[in-house]
Picture 1 (cartoon, rainbow, N blue to C red):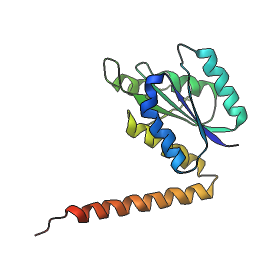
Picture 2 (picture 1 turned 180 degrees about the horizontal axis):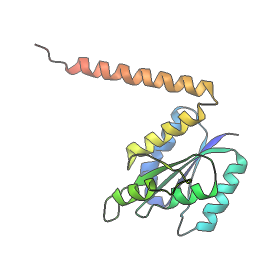
Picture 3 (picture 1 turned 45 degrees about the vertical axis):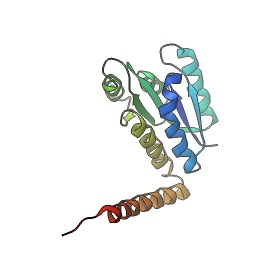
Length: 164
């Protein structure tokens, strides 16, 4: 069974990362969501990543704030694609998490998306684009979604257009 794993560093990340899960649901992509901390539960994180890989996880999405080491720790445990979602909070309101997530050492890549809800949604889309390399049905769904988004922009514009 192929699926996406969403790992959040704490329960406070849930309200944002449910957007990621909802986006995957919309496209029928199997996923699971757990709380596991790089700092408070490192053994749980290690065991979960190993077990998820064995069960068919293809992409890991990791959300954490402040020091935001979760994505980097998961990257150290697997060669599967990792997508990091920096979370708001801390003294820099998410900028610290963004910098921590994006600044990985050579050979330990973490694809990093925007801070917060936009990042949660984009993490789901990026995971699906990765999965669509081997899933033509998903690729078609993503292409159809792009077409619908473009049509919505045109429709929205017609609702408000003012011309000379």
